[in-house]
Image (cartoon, rainbow, N blue to C red; front, side, top):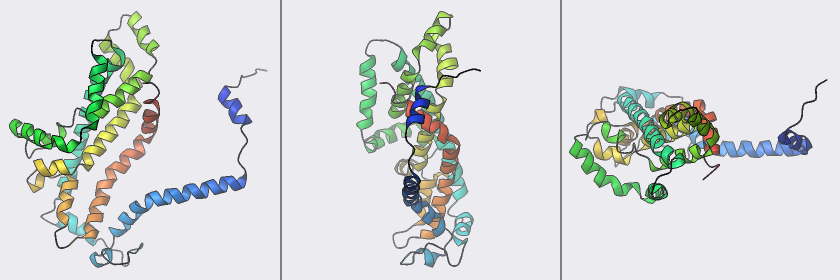
Length: 292
């Protein structure tokens, strides 16, 4: 007969008193109410997208469409002046490319700041972090001049490249690299592995949760960006989804049914990404603040 020693977590879990049935039910009810409060705007957005134009603008608002209508989606997809599918493709391409560039540049910049010793390292890191306090709107004119000089106006490069170097990404990845046990890298150095091999074959595979989290955050930031695309994208076919959807409302009228239908379309990629990456997001966020 073999006896297995219990870990401190198992002993603590066994000794911790379990809450009574009444407390569990109360906790479940409270959590259900909080969850309903958070998802109610999403539910209302979806419901409104299936209303008629008159019902969507009606006061008081209703929670159930009567009658159920696909008019908003038919108008969006069939209107010649609103190429929503083209806007959707532009946003997907730009956000995905920007997310890849952010992960690459942030990882390459963060690893030396986390593991290598060189003169001025703390000053460099402090300067990078300090740029997080600069309002992005201040950089619109300098970025516009640079993009115009490079000939990138009215192209997707204008909304992909300028934000590829992310100060938050460097800070986030640096914190994760610091949390990785340094003994793994020291053992690899003793085996004759150079720094580049350690970075690509040991550190990056362990940093998949952080990279997935950063990629999702960068994707969301680029996907939701409205102001910058309005400045640098001119033709209707080159618009991204947030900037293009703004044309569905005029100074005298707002098509709430169209706006909600467009918002539903814009939410689909984000929800899909979150469903598939939520495990990595939780692990990446929890480990990125272990050491500083």
